[in-house]
Image 1 (cartoon, chains in turn purple, brown):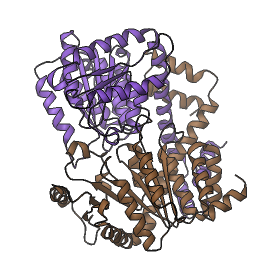
Image 2: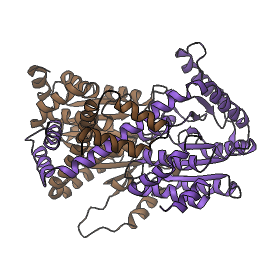
Image 3: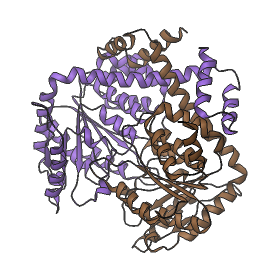
Image 4: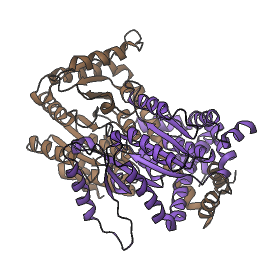
Amino acid sequence: MTPDPISRVLAGDPRAVARAISLVEDDAEAGRELIGAIYGHTGRAYIVGVTGAPGVGKSTLVDRLIAEARRAGRTVGVLAIDPTSPFSGGALLGDRVRMTTHSNDTDVFVRSMATRGHLGGVAAATSDAVLVLDAAGKDLVIIETVGVGQDEVDIVRTADVSIVVLVPGAGDDVQALKAGIMEIADIFVVNKADRDGADQVVQSVTANLSLQTFAEGEWRPPVLKTEAANGVGVDRLWEDIGRFRQHQAPHYQRRQQVRHEARLRGLLAQRLVEYVEGRLAAGAFERMVDDVANRRIDPYSAAARLVTQVLSI
Amino acid sequence: MTPDPISRVLAGDPRAVARAISLVEDDAEAGRELIGAIYGHTGRAYIVGVTGAPGVGKSTLVDRLIAEARRAGRTVGVLAIDPTSPFSGGALLGDRVRMTTHSNDTDVFVRSMATRGHLGGVAAATSDAVLVLDAAGKDLVIIETVGVGQDEVDIVRTADVSIVVLVPGAGDDVQALKAGIMEIADIFVVNKADRDGADQVVQSVTANLSLQTFAEGEWRPPVLKTEAANGVGVDRLWEDIGRFRQHQAPHYQRRQQVRHEARLRGLLAQRLVEYVEGRLAAGAFERMVDDVANRRIDPYSAAARLVTQVLSI
């Protein structure tokens, strides 16, 4: 990227931002360069993770959150992580709906991230896309996920505040989220709260929370009821996000450090594999695969031997 | 593990098999040793992947498949990948139901794999658990997943035949599976086919398949209707699994090769990170994290620099 597109990203130009996100999605090398160029301008956005099973009304809720944020004078970027197969097409439709609602507002940027065919993984691409929106001056970056795979847990972990959305009437089975997601929720939302059973869901989550011990002064996740479609309760959610942010301010630096550490470790792994594959003698890797396939060596011993060959330990 | 437990695994002793699977789940080092000891006895089991959103009736379908396999005189191992958070408990219940159905049959082994808190990732643990069941003499190993995360796509890729289960009446949104799952289905099953809309689902999948081009003689995924709860249609599914196996026999070797290659590449990455982290100067990694956190260097450049430090390229 020439300096000009970079300045346009930093100025918040929507088309330059869109192109920059496509770049980090599609092209590992150019994406790395871009991040290198904008990285010094990042670190100011507050990152909100919104997670819930398909059908709980995440898109509508996020839409209302955008409105609250705009009322408070904040600029907003949204990344909707779309695990949908090309066979269906639900999330893209949701995206179009949102784009229409806020399409005249240049301080709102909404983008679906496809998760298919990804080089460095969707978690890495999302992480870079957040940096782009951050550098583009968005005060708030909302990441929306269905919270079901390890990738998504990794994504939620990168948020400053994690909101888990549930609905009444969905069986346990349907609401099943990836292990670890419920545990890292900072705020619980029971959406579609006008439906039967909303209070049971609130009670069930509250009962689970009461099994955990919270230290003196530690944040205890609130359980809120909302009807996003009717605009009910989202103002309260917005307030609680603010309360949480204030509460966490003393620990913010430390949380950031942990996050940077995990990211760096992941990138290190990627680099190393690239390095080793580039260094192995021609055919060495294939011969080892052949030995594993024919049960002459087990895969763990094979990996150990390849490492020894390249690094001559 | 002393030789005795190993022989008991190879003899198919259920308690030894259960302990061996716990080992590959919980303990990286002991798990590697175990795999090394049994690996020469693997390579005979046929691996069936069954994937579908929560609530499509996978457990019941798998239960009926076990019955078909037993009728055909095959021994069966089942691994149910359970992405459920401790907050709900659906899959474990399903597991107990299945255990009861076949609990008097020592040639059937059923096991839930929890996905929480995993060292090498659930895909790696599943892969090793399959090897344990294979070495224990199970003719058929069925892997059951909800098919939503990258881990699960990785798991499904290790199966010899992939079955994707859908149901009528669930919106596109609810059936949303991870991109790539629909694409690697070898057989589609529309379960609960007595419900309204079953034919629409069949038509919709068939329409999607008709957009793909199949070479002369290439396998074209059939779309079957079943009512697993009533035992309807599962015999046909069992036949189609057999047909697919026969059809693929000429390509089996090649598919195995690809699988071993992917596995070895993953293990290589893991080994390398362990190696590098053990070699970095004390505090070097932490200082680099600090530099990233303070925007003195971007994460990609930081990873590159750490690699250079250790490998002195």
